[in-house]
Image (cartoon, rainbow, N blue to C red; front, side, top):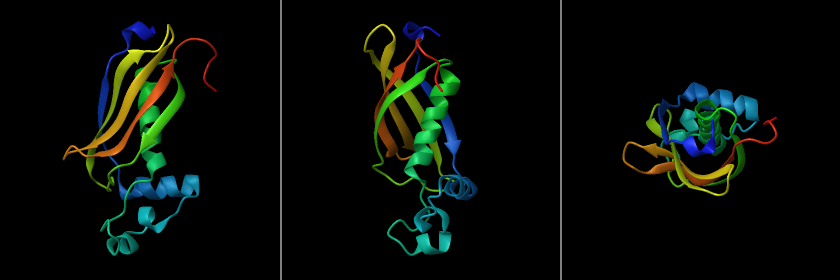
Length: 133
């Protein structure tokens, strides 16, 4: 895909408690706020919340599936609102501007039904050049 053809992408997703557990097992991040519903019920969140890097991984996967050959060169992100298990969210990529002939600045977000964002940021996506490893 040529960078000039870059289009916005949106994907609905529901992360489950099983997703949280599997990500915790793979990453080694077994913080009970993510993987222990009984513990999390007693916290200010009231339930388990997604790992920030699980949300980022979903963003990265959407980049790879939507724009074949794209390379994620840089990502700045924040996690302003908790994302809960079984909560529908929209993962969105919105091209902002072309940085040069082969790179685009892209807004990245995981948006909840109430409009709050579980992930909010920007990335730099490259096209062409060396293959992503």
